[in-house]
Image (cartoon, rainbow, N blue to C red; front, top):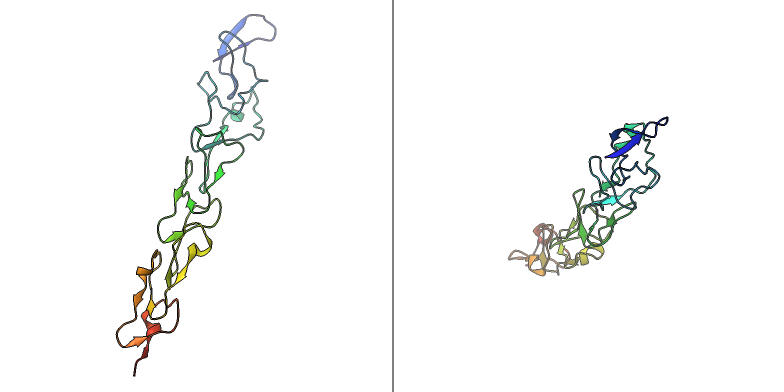
Length: 195
């Protein structure tokens, strides 16, 4: 709590909460001209604190007015949106969170890290909230390159499932059929009969 004084009196009239992000010493007036630096002081707290994991410091001017409590409601520490992260133990994110790198994603708000794309999926973009499944007709053996490093099934085989990660997903054409096509995505492509 900060202290406030009547303008016409040198005596303290009442204890009153300082504006958010501002602090005061014990028995001193609020220092509204000196906000916490890259930290926040939520209402009801008496110290500034760093933004927690999964949030960034909203540096844009928040015009707080000591006499208008509605201007006190916006937090300085804001949740990271999906596709981004902030790890406060590493460094404070200022103005925005850090984008997830290719090969990773984050599908939740307020996260401190990114998730690895699973086997058979990939992501080539920064700041993604999902990974893409590998296409039918082949398999993907990389999580962070274009098309997941897609490799088409060799001729004589097919793969009709998404999300495959090895050549083992390429099945042999049924007995009595063949295909000269690479990347076949169904055994219907193998309809040429051996005569």
